Amino acid sequence: MKLGFSRAEEDFRAECAAWLKGQMAGEFADIKGITTLTAKAERRKEWEQQLAAHKWSCIGWPEEWGGRNASLAQQVIFAEEYARAGVPGRVNHIGIELAGPTILAFGTDEQKKRFLPGIAAGQTIFCQGFSEPDAGSDLASVRTKARLEGDKWVVNGQKIWTSLAHISDWIFVVSRSEEGSKGPKGLTFLMMPLDQPGIDVRGIKQINGDAEFNETFFTDATCPADSLIGAVGGGWQIAMGLLAFERGVSTLGQQMGFRNELDAIIAAAKANGSANDPLIRQRIAKAEIGLRLMRYGALRMLSNTDHSKIDGAALTYKIQWATWRRNLGELAMDVLGQMGEVTDNPEYEWDMLPNLFLFSRSDTIYGGTNQIQRNMIAERALGLPREPRGDV
Image (cartoon, rainbow, N blue to C red; front, side):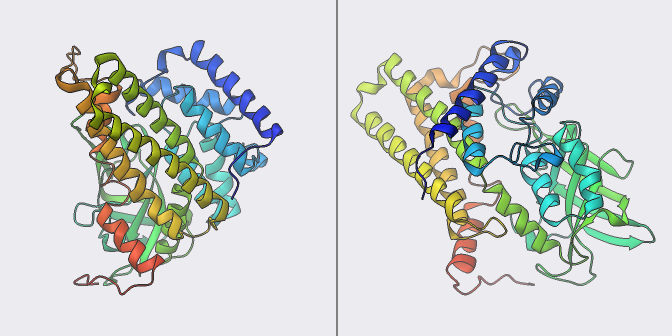
């Protein structure tokens, strides 16, 4: 397992840090420090294009598709420096980290030519159509239906918790294309344009005042017949491959964001005197230890994982960081005390730490609930008997 970086890699880190620092102190200073995903959305689309113009948008992709063919270590370094510089989250995270790698791995040459240049350029924003109201994190229970009619797919159904669908251009949809199929069989993975009469996107207001999530309704929505990735009925395999990418190098950048949050908690505890409370100090120490353990675990995962599939390390990582960060949010509020429950902003916008607490309540739910993660660890990593699933 690689725990350090070479001189050349540290030189690359300095290059990344200098460029990002210059951008956040210059042309894009107005977006620095934003902690919600929807704030200044149009401005952040411009940021996506700025990243692309300087070939920082998708550095791990092959050069022919707009990347730098960066090594794993370089991708980790960029993700860390991106978070360290206070740059807000990518509004095209789904396109860069999920849709693009999935197309690279499973798409045809024509599909690569159709989708990858726009994603890399920051001009095509993607969102993810997996979860449904009656399926939640259980992807094998989706009911959205797709049927092939001539040269197009016709889709009917509903997705929920569709992050940033209201500002996206395309959505990838796991749909049931085989009548009467159950579980993972009979699913098809489709790429669909959002700007069409058959798709209705409705926002969902969150407890932190943001509205990044949406309900997405499909009523005879269509996409070309060749918009499916992989084979008809092979959507489960494509979706599982995509989820392997979700546990990729961005995890180290995510942890740098956690580092910023923990540092803010420590600073607040010192400022208001709560650091003198031995229980608070103990919880801060426990959070620090947990964060360091996660870093080593992520480095091990990235060093050993075959990224064409999800292994045990990847399965455990989601439940580990989600539970840790939920606890971190509770620690933040206990440090802030009553001052953390009041905001001067009439638009119900919160500073970093109250927002951390409010948003982290969802960490153990989205992207696979803790319950689903435990089932996956038991069944797919440990080979234990499957949990009874009613009609599956």
